[in-house]
Length: 280
Image 1: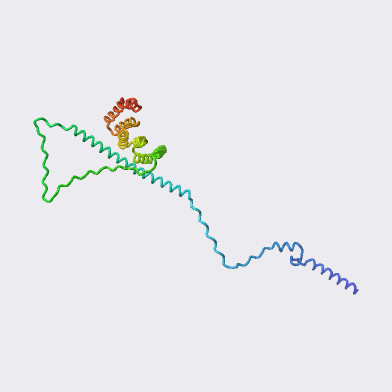
Image 2: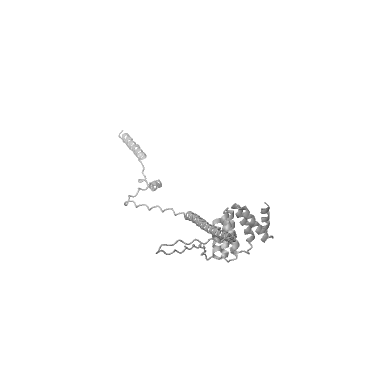
């Protein structure tokens, strides 16, 4: 009986021990299995403690300037300034040409008036000149004021005439009329006796004619004939002079100019055009 009870106690202890071993939790630290090692390696590392105050961030580098756009804008502004200067110089030269034309016309009219002075009829004596008024004592007669001479614009360019003419033609083809007139005026002023002067002045006058500046064109066409009276451009200049005169409202003077063209240059192309204009 005592042995049976002792056996039951041993069996109970054995069963209790198996239950304890079966329900004991296993931790990665307790087990040296690969799973435990993998768990330890997969565990997130603890954040490191800050060593000190955070360093200031570097400022962002500024965006590089757009040089191409700035250069384009500056070039555009420079071109506008050059065109404005060219227009001012062209206007100044046109006014000078008009003044010379008016002075020449006044001289021609004065010469005509002197040649047409009426003769004194026989039996009549010419009137005596009026005596000059007596001046008070202590006053000396004043000398007449001299008439100021018209300044002639001379170009200070050192560019060869051939290069100036080529530049003027290029400006004309590019429809930059004011710049073309400015360059061609430089040629005329710097090289008045050069063979290209005739063609340069004809181009200037023709540009003014196309712009309907008949008075300025007339002055330049007449200046061309005066400078190169035997030039190849004279017949065409006479034709254009008549057109300028007609544009200014003087049809009778235009007719006289075309008649002169037909008479002096009968075989020229300009004379054939003048005949058509005379018939019309």
